[in-house]
Image 1 (cartoon, rainbow, N blue to C red):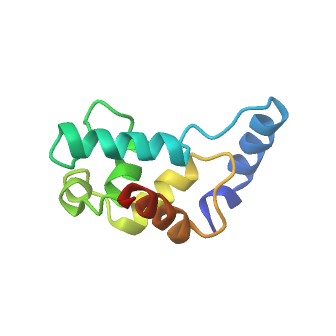
Image 2: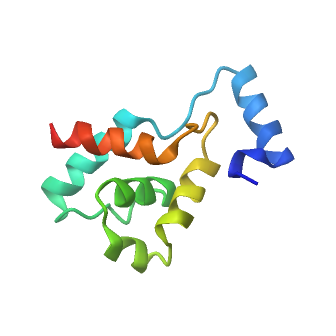
Image 3: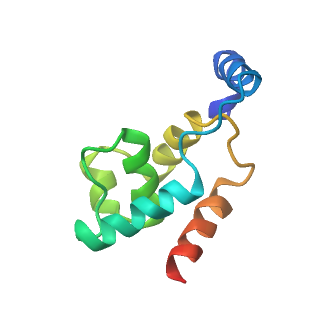
Length: 105
């Protein structure tokens, strides 16, 4: 079962959509945080960010040391990030890759 397939997640996401809420993690936000991490923190997410923000940035930057320090595998990080989204991408690998590609520009 995918993170957004649980009845609780579906109900919560339906409520968010009805109220016009959007995902807290957008590609632009993740990209901005990645740029900050590269410029100010030796390529590591800030520990002051939320768990989802740290994990998303660590996945994009392929920061396995940060994931290990948080005790997450890449797959667990994907699940955690997607589980907190209102409308998770159908292909999370491609979604993260597109952010990584934009960062490389």
